[in-house]
Length: 318
Image 1 (cartoon, rainbow, N blue to C red):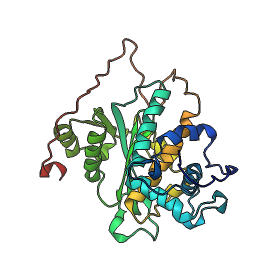
Image 2: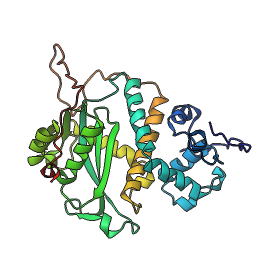
Image 3: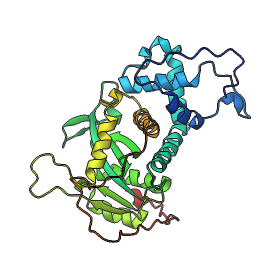
Image 4: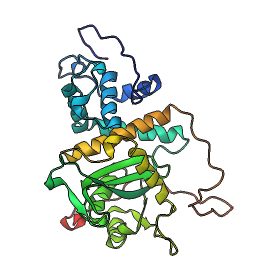
């Protein structure tokens, strides 16, 4: 409902690959926040169709163009498109849409709507000249000057939470904030898989203060160069999915929150398209990187419904 007192423009022809299909729009439209004019506080009626706004945001995200380069065939000024992008991020509606779509995808695939195990990894990307010195750093391991993305995905590779920060700190340092946020938003999660960079004192900290079991997947002893490892290949695949959007190839955003918003829009597009397709068939054989499971009765999974108490002490987040 747009409650506009002016005639709505005709639906534009959708010829960009990033445009929403009718099936995708049927999924996204109910999740969008209500227009201001329908709320008790009131507001100005919206002039432009929301589907055109969403298509314009997805165009910028998928093609990596500047906001001023939004095509004129959308019929919306670029400042209006950026305004919707910024308001939906600041109000928390973008995070809510992402969370609801994630549950829908899991139900669509025949899984529990909430996952109990996640996989953690990071990715360093170069920062453009628009990224200020105060929000960028140098990753000495990857030799990259820019920002680092920390990604949490479920066991199917669907992104659950993303956090962006400077690239200089060790992975275990910002991982504390990310795991703390994970405990608050997803209290049902019990196990976190990660690489050896997240080991050490972080394992004891996560178990003591958050009640999380952090398990590391080390490199193989005979590994020479890159190799697909168990559990970790799922988050690596998720990183390749978000890199298909050209806006995510480098970090162009002045604000870290805008970088996280672009990553969220990428995953929202990914999940909306997943919901319009039939669910994938169950895998009959394990992945090559996964160890074969023993034949017999499957091990039951215990789901903790009530979150454990969290100690909010100054030393907990040091």
